Structure formats: structure tokens, C-alpha cells
Image (cartoon, rainbow, N blue to C red; front, side, top):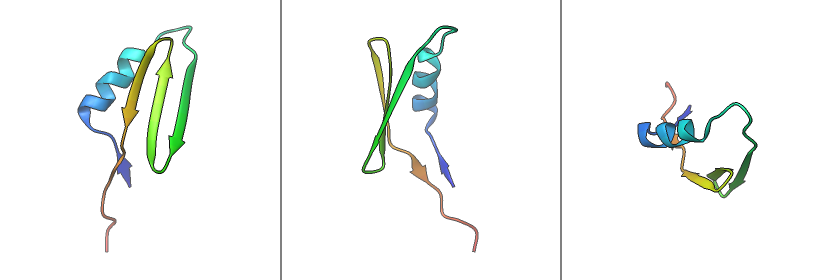
Length: 51
């Protein structure tokens, strides 16, 4: 299971708007989301699965 921190979630929410065009790049497990001139760098947190 993977999740994002509250800070990253808030930053991604600020990118959202009705007419947005978002670009997402994934490389080596890191994610970069950009919209207009704003960029959010995301490193997903991996949760340990149930045994």
C-alpha cells in the first residue's frame, strides 16, 4: 500500500482547478506533478503489507 503525506496532499490540492492541465512524471519511484508554473515533488510512502 502506498500513501502521500498531508503536506504533499495539500500541495497537490492547490494545483487543482476546473480547467487544469496536469503533467505527471515518474522516475525511480519519485513523482513530479506540474500544472501551469507550479510543481509538486512527491515521494510515496510505502506501508508494510499485512502478514
